[in-house]
Length: 174
Image (cartoon, rainbow, N blue to C red; front, side, top):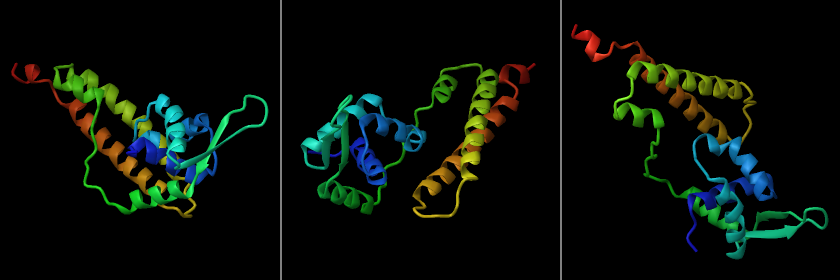
């Protein structure tokens, strides 16, 4: 069975959580890797079962109530996660920015830029507030990714500000 990025997200989150339901995984993604990696909710419900069938996760049912499925890592899952982490990647990110897509196809530059700048300012403020919570403890990976997100948002604020402040070419030729 081929493991996908979603597989590794599930394995990594379960390593941190110990045990979780697919709903728990959805919540964990929203507060962490979901800020830089898009994962459809449907995959977070299907992937744990697929990984359990392949021996990467164990599954147990709650004894009563809704009898939710709780998943945790097996040794095979821990080994797969360790191997994946040990392999550096040269893959570059895929940029899927609706603002850039609209800009490319001729949207009003200043109107679009003003809205995009504010959206990135809000995300930057959210990240900077989260950064204040760093107590310096390990693991450092989540904090390093947060630093990357802060740098990313600062650059987007700079980019959209420059476009928002620029006069449209039609006005410059008058």
